[in-house]
Image (cartoon, rainbow, N blue to C red; front, side, top):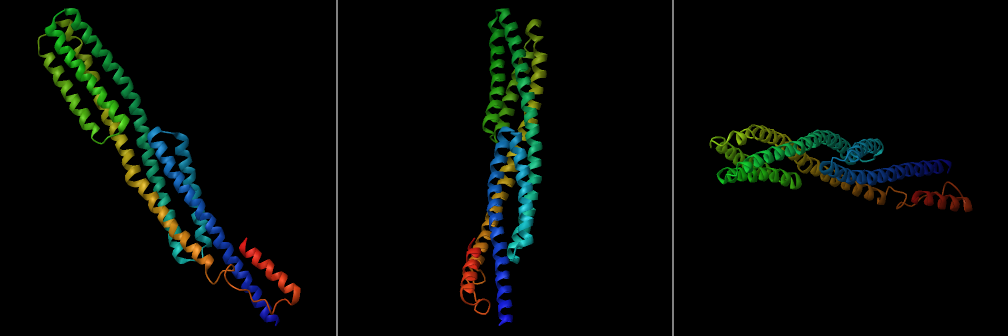
Length: 291
């Protein structure tokens, strides 16, 4: 009878340890799921607002998630879930690498926007000087083509503003078309034999327009790269990771409800404790098992 009692005690202890591991991993899986959803939001905030706290939060969530996955892998009782946890560790490490690449693109975007803002102001100021010089001639054959050039330059700036607002992949092509039209109009004016006081303003406009175009090319490329990294790599990877995590959670629930769990398995303590002691121990074990 003593041997039966000892065997039953070991069985209870084994089941308790198994249930504890399942409970701990269930809690970890839930926390990992929260982290993955938070990662999605933090990356999205950063890509649009260059929000540094969001970037830092994403890094912290990644680190915490990896540690949770490592702990889950160490204590899991399932080979299938072990593969899931180890695979997710690799996924999160990939998310980190992608986020850092996205961060580089977002930093380039922020710098480019500052250059575009200053360059746009310079382009507008130089255009204004040309318009003033043309107006002073009092000659409509001069003011009309200059006004046409001014409108084309304005369309260049509008194309830039629109792209920065909507981040449309077709935006750069529209911008380039407007730049080409403005440059062609400027070239026509340079060849038109206008007064010297008007022609002197052409050089600064040509220079500032070229610089504005170069800044846009750099900035738009960085914006589209950041968008591509998030939409085509980070977001799908997070979605796939959430799906994998759901598989692990389903397995954990099944194991907790299985025949080897204290919640569902009857306890045989008949050879362990008689009378009231037996019933008290039985109630205690079952309460602990459901805690």
